[in-house]
Amino acid sequence: MPNIVIPPELRPGDGRFGSGPSKVRTESVGALLAAAPTYMGTSHRREGVRSVVRRARDGLHDLFGLPDGYEVLLGNGGSTSFWDAAAFGLVERRSQHLSFGEFGSKFAAVITAAPHLEDPEVIESPAGTHPLARADAAVDAYCWPHNETSTGVQTVVERPSGSEPDQLVVIDGTSGAGGLAVDPTQFDVYYFAPQKCFAGDGGIWLALCSPAAIARIERIHASDRWVPPSLDLHIALENSRLDQTYNTPALATLFLLADQVEWMLGNGGLAWASDRCDRSAEVLYGWAEASPVAGAFVDDPAARSHVTATIDFDESVDASVIAATLRANGIVDTEPYRKLGRNQLRIALFPSIDPDDVAILTRAIDFVVNALA
Ligand SMILES: *Cc1c(COP(=O)(O)O)cnc(C)c1O
Image (cartoon, rainbow, N blue to C red; front, side, top):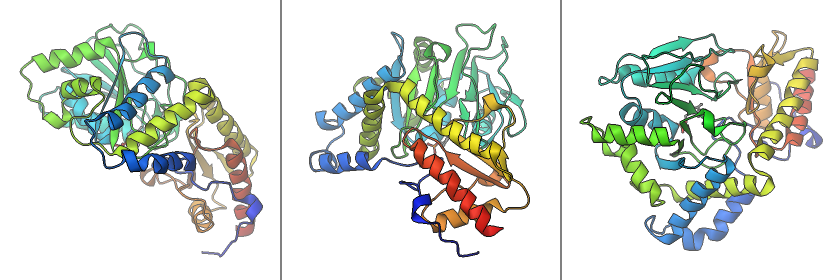
């Protein structure tokens, strides 16, 4: 690999552009350090930790403008564990899934493998596009990601027209939540983990649940279905109402989450955070369109992700060499999703990432491309 040194003025203030775990704001880590002596290493059943969980839950309620009756649930294990929990506690009999990348297809695979559920209806479309959910009386849940992190495609969160109120809309907001606008009346469950827009660490899941979703959790709980306790959404519901988790959570993760939610609220809430992502997206896609060697991977401008952007390069440049050169210069995690197998960079545009740093990054990429030519 050529030894290319990027000059200091072309280095972003912060070099973290990964799509998860993503940039954690240094101020958050500083706040954690300051709180640590009376917070880290204390009981998660006592007020010190529970008050942080409360801040996170109340803050998310505000941030998303949740209607009356919606509740914020949390549990251990991240979004991947939530898929397992949903297979036990949300899907009653049969679900519909949109599959157009790694994450949407993984959830569909979880449901397909669950012996107590019918095979799901899976609607697919090629990487770089997304299909739409369609009303079907035979399903009790519609499931898709708000943002497909693996391909950089964002979707719209809207109840399928003709769907019934008792059919739940279950949205994977892992990479979209906190960076993309969303109308809570259009979902029943919006679940995510804090290591993306919420700039925390992994290991927990959060789920914003409508009254219909809570009724579903309660109905399944009252049925004779066996549910492993650590994946039991009813147990999670009862614990969440007490600002606790069923078993020991990672306290630093909770702290960073609460801090980031309050950072967003203090700056103007979700509208502010999503505007910031829009600005970064405008900078990045605008640069790519104007570049002789780069372009957006996603054809439809409306589907281009404003939180995880995928940029293709033509054959004259090797994107993996660009990513490796950036990495050698302290600009990390611009590699594409491994299984997509394209000549591509994937660049996170989460709210913590400064749009000015995105602009500097584009100039750094130009510099590397020129140096390689
Ligand atoms: C990152 C991601 C996941 C997986 O999250 P974990 O917390 O690692 O389980 C799931 N869905 C989407 C859309 C993601 O971006």
